[in-house]
Length: 68
Figure 1: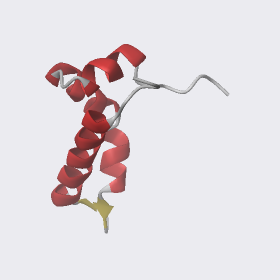
Figure 2 (figure 1 turned 120 degrees about the vertical axis):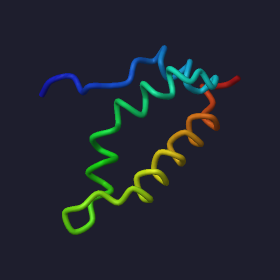
Figure 3 (figure 1 turned 90 degrees about the horizontal axis):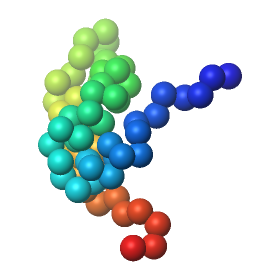
């Protein structure tokens, strides 16, 4: 198996600090998975997509690295 496509560590650090461009990079990275998760009867559910994005952003801001 190949190396999984991960969000770069530096991007995560910047995103957890609230840098808008980094948060957008994280959302872009997971956009396909988010869209697949929002499919209902073959259609995208925009409310569900927005909810997932809000929870991902909220989780980024709560994330803490190691023993800080």
